[in-house]
Image (tube, rainbow, N blue to C red; front, side, top):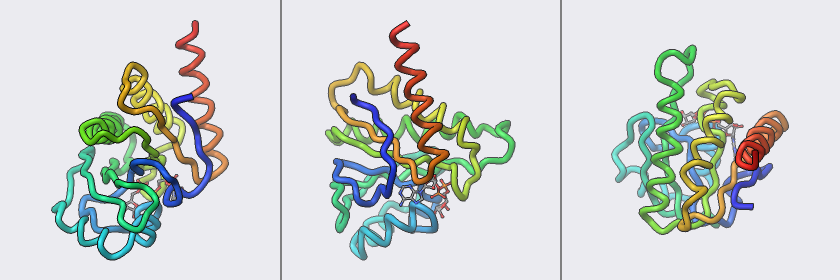
Length: 174
Ligand code: AR6
């Protein structure tokens, strides 16, 4: 199957690209961002500095340096307030722009963390619906990307992402 839920640490994945849930500085932080920066090493930090930050919903590329992944796609998720301040569209932009960057760079396998659902507070149900549907629609008829991993770091995220993917498959076969 092209789309799978993977339970574990994104920094260990041997895929063409992992996506980072960064902040606008693109210079590192906590959560998955901190883990990626620790694992990718000092040259990675230098490459991030050259990106000059990003706006919410944008996506930018660096190499993976000390990571097993060849590339890191840095995207900035929205901080969740109440869902009525453009958060869904911004979160969609993160997935859309990450896929766009991947396709432009010949990336065939990509792993996404659950963007915005940690420190940025996006409810996991809504965020997972957006993540799976947006990526599925953009990759189902595409021959560039042949593997997408949705990475879950905890039980709840794993079960919600799995449910959302199954729902998409059911819809497709109805
Ligand atoms: N591998 C996979 N997933 C992880 C890992 C990991 N090693 N570590 C955490 N997660 P978060 P956000 C999960 O908070 O909500 C940073 O400070 C985590 O359990 O990392 O987009 C940035 O610099 C959750 O499911 O990102 C920003 O300031 C998901 O990754 C801010 O946090 C996202 O949680 C971004 O907040």
